[in-house]
Length: 110
Length: 115
Image 1 (cartoon, each protein chain N blue to C red):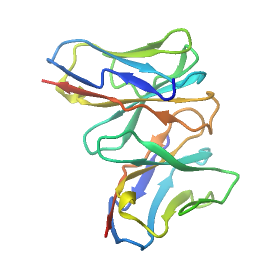
Image 2 (tube, rainbow over the protein chains, first blue to last red):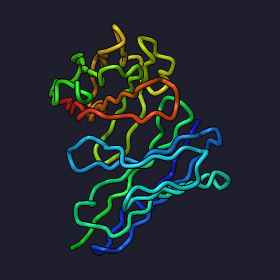
Image 3 (spheres, rainbow over the protein chains, first blue to last red):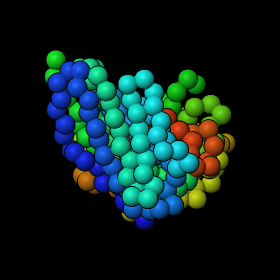
């Protein structure tokens, strides 16, 4: 079955810097890759997703890249702000269930 | 409704008791998913529904866990003879169709504590 590895587990950046979180997946049939942001005690919220027919997608300060050959995808956050502090999860799917990475705790220091 | 609704928000029960968790998906969403999140951990898939059918139950940890969905809407996750390792946040999500590549939207979850 699918397995998703996520790195780093914790990431601390200064406000205004960029943050990058990386994930690898094992199942070459996976074709959908969402990213969720989860603040403490809150529900996971979808922030961006990418499908396998696209290599990159951007939404304001957030971008995701996908390398199908290498089976990895990354989240890029530019001009980080304190409110970006949260746990970020990547996931992969080939239909139906999502398989999640273990999460990255991002801390943005003012 | 406007979003995925789950109840109860918190449940504390004694080991050995049965519990029922409820999920009301976004109106019109045909696919419904259950996940479990243990403290400080990622999300673990349990089961998903296409309409009232469950084509993938592969994530249910044991035969003490079961789920059903009626009328293509509300779903109930039942845990029988609860154990302490069942303590976790149980999250429900829904998507517009069962076909892959559709965004899944989560509820606030039920925090289950087994004493």
